[in-house]
Amino acid sequence: MSDFLKTLESISPILVCLLVCGAKIVEISIQSLKTCMMVKGQRLKAAGLGFVECIIWGLVISTLIGTLGDNLLLLLFYCVGYATGLFIGSSIENKIALGTSNLELIASDESTEKITAYLKAQGRGYTVFAGQGSVDKMNMIFIVLPRKETPSVLRDIRRACDGKVFVVASEVSKYAGGYGMVK
Image (cartoon, rainbow, N blue to C red; front, side):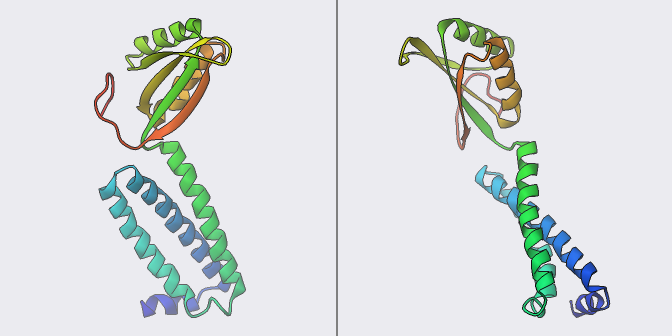
């Protein structure tokens, strides 16, 4: 490790700042993904990411420990790397869309028929409950599906109903059974 620190001392200070910033971006992006995987029950993948995260953290902190108080530019790059890593990590997680979503749709009888026809054609499971809205009779439709598929399903449902559906989307931490669920 001391050879690594000696190598860093011979590099331009701005390059060290950029290396620290880049390493911090990667580390915090990994940390964000690791946390999401832990919450969603993917413990083995999370552990692997945690191992890589610790290696990067060890290299970054060993670079900073002796000089951070004296070098405000290095501190600034460290903080920029941290904030950027949070943004990138959450953006990556949003793109890969880990987990399962629950959609609760509230629709009229006419829209419910269109929605259930679409869901049947897609081979998706759903449950419909009759209810009363503030003005008219309404139906509540529950759908559980992979989070990755939620945007396209919502787009298709809104198109089928001309946007006349109220939607609440939430994440599901655990479920068991159900028609059409891929496990």
